[in-house]
Length: 223
Length: 146
Image 1 (cartoon, rainbow over the protein chains, first blue to last red):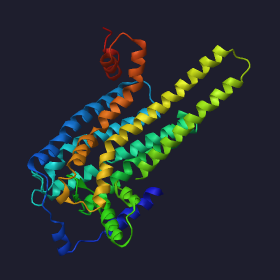
Image 2: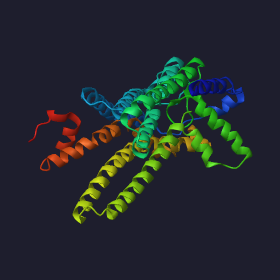
Image 3: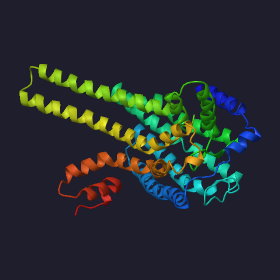
Image 4: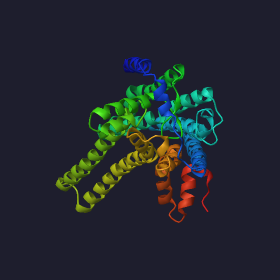
């Protein structure tokens, strides 16, 4: 029910995404102020982190799969680690697979197709955020409300897994289907423009109204 | 955003619940007349230990998440205040932290997940080093006692 409403909302948001005029697009073309060394550092650092993360996540997956004891906590952590594996695998490719024609990244060798693929996986990797939320919910229900593990497994676990996977997957597919992925403003990466859309809309609103910190918080995470 | 709100509110509720549970258990044990003072103290200590262990695990999960997502969160806020690519050099420290910490969530999670086993190993084998306990927590009984 929730998923259907949210999907409709996302589809409506993407369909109503305001296309930039030629003048606005010209405004968007800016020269990168990072030095070559800084750009190289930013391109290499994720590789180092991703290797450590791959090691950590694969260790967790091995530990859980080899353990005899099964519990909702372990299954949620397993889902979280699988999403982290995907995230760790995608992160190092970000500076490389952005379109070489338009990107100012020093090692950009990609094209629109690789950018879209990267955007898709990047968006889907945000399921780890959903799984972190599920884990917090698990602690809340078991510690605060004393829900037994058996009840949690039967009543809450399946919807949590479903939401954690389906929502990022639907948004990732929607973004790819609309050809809407592009390089983000500040970060050397690719993001779903829903978050960019929120940022741009709020920027326009900001010119007319006072700056509200909460707006920045809203734009801080992909919907 | 929904997930972040869930994480923050859930952990706050867990924190307040743990705090009130500890206080309640203290009051209950102090009132109970069938126990000796030493028994009360022992039971109180055990109960507090268990609640704190679960709360600590929840806190570590939350801390790992926020450590890896905080720079990304900050970048989006900066982006909102019209900081485009032309100002990336000024934001280099933040960009560096984001690139370093964002993919590290799996690494943090490994330590959070192995933490209870690490603490057990430290308790069972107090003569072994921390590094040994960590390896034991990660790889199980394959790591032999030295």
